[in-house]
Image (cartoon, rainbow, N blue to C red; front, side, top):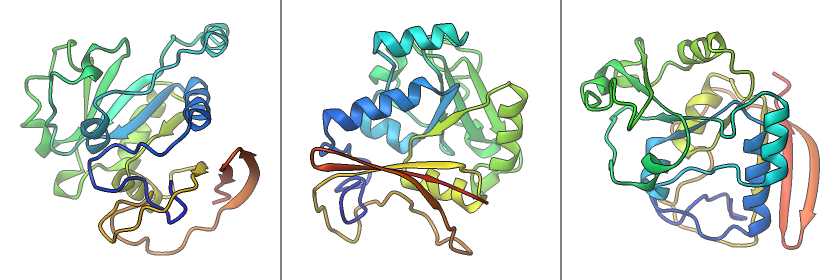
Length: 217
């Protein structure tokens, strides 16, 4: 994020202010995961997902018995996507997370592995969105132990609201974006109570700061 806490200048627009160091850091973190979750707005902004390409990290995944790429979960209440975006040609396993309401817009994806290999429905989500306690229980049943949440801000807010995040990595980039409508790293409504985190590590690479926090819960 920028120094003033923004992740983009405009909603649904990709960020172009991060460095190659930050991208490598993100790839390494993803390489350690069984799955990654990102929102439909993030997919619409970037049209792709981050994949593991580093030969060392691919080899380490193989040693751990993991497939080359983690499962990709797209969280979308609307279930509406551009089916021509590059994401649907990338060599990853794709699963859609949606609600019973969103399922009405997803019929073309059901049983069509060209798009999503599976559609997971949050039965109790409804108009309020995804029921994350229900979904995380389903993910645990699949044997997924480590999952990365890649944003955007609305998705992050919904998971923080249920206090379901264990660790947080933040890269602070030396830019100011400004703008009251520019999305922040945690959007949505305010949390009922502030969550206190514990700072684990601070690392500087050139002009960026890499912060690692844990959630003591």
